[in-house]
Image (cartoon, rainbow, N blue to C red; front, side):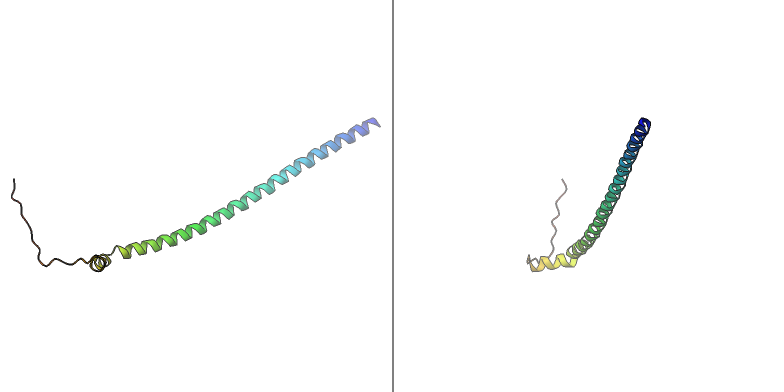
Length: 97
């Protein structure tokens, strides 16, 4: 009888070890899946943020092109700065040294 009780203890310890190993592998699989879902969520957020930044960049480029146009600069010079075209253009020529 003693052999049977020892054998059953060994088989129980093997089953428990197998169960612990299986539980660990299952936990590792679930953890890996959770990380994959989290990384996918972060990737989607980055894509969304990138799209918003591209739209903002396009708006700023349009505004820059509008503000830096020659006609707009001329309008600002005339209206805000009260600049006018010269009536007479004069040049002074320096004699060579």
